[in-house]
Length: 283
Image (cartoon, rainbow, N blue to C red; front, top):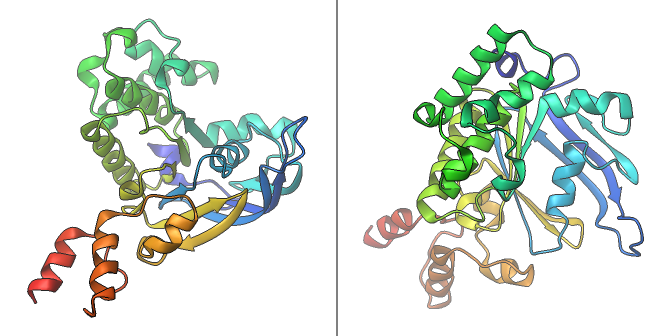
C-alpha cells in the first residue's frame, strides 16, 4: 500500500499524546488524566487495563473522534483539536471497533471495503486497486461477493480490517477488535497485525487478553485514566502480583514462574513464553 509505505509525511511518523486529559459531558471524573505517550509507525503497540481504565477513550482521542479536554494529540503531526484537520486524521489513522456488525454498510464484502475510498472521492480505478489490495492482504478475496451478514464473526472482523486498510492508513487502531472472537479467529487477527507492522503500518491494539499483548513490541497499562506501566512486554507483563493489583489476569506462565521463584528456584523474571520456561527448566 503506497501511502502506508510512505509514512505519515513531513509531520512525523508517530502518534504523540501530550498531557492529555478528557472528561465526558456531565461526568465529574476524568476519563484520562495527564497521559503522555508516543506510538511509533511500523510497530505493534498493545494497550491494556481493567474496564473503565480509559483505553477506548484514549483510542478515540488518537483517531480524533474525541477532542481533548486539555493537552493535545498529534496524529502524524496533525493536532486533533483542529476541527478542519480531523478528516485528514481519519484518513491516516483508521479504526476498527469491537463489534464488526456496527460498521457494516455494504450489501457485499466488496462494497463494504470500497465504502471508505469512495467517500474520499477517488477515481474508480484507484478504488478498485485499493479494494483488491486490501482483500488480498487480509486473505478474504474469496469472500468478495458474499453478504457480510452471512459471515462468521471472525470473517466480519477481517472485512472491517480490510475496509480500514483500503484507506491506506499510516496507523490502524484496534479497539478490542478480538474480544468477541474465538481463539482461532483472535490469533489470526493478531498475526495479521504483526504482518502489517512489517509493511510500515503502526498498530495500536486495545485488548484485555494479555497473551495478545505479549506479542506486541511495546505495552501500555492504563489505570484510572493514567499510565500505570509502559515498556517491552517482558518488563510490563512479568509481575503477576502487580498485574492483579491493576485488575488484570496475569499470564499463566508468569504465575508458574512466580511460584517457582517463591520455592527458591532462580527462574528469570522476564519469562513470558511457556516453551522458554520449559527450556530453562530442562537446562
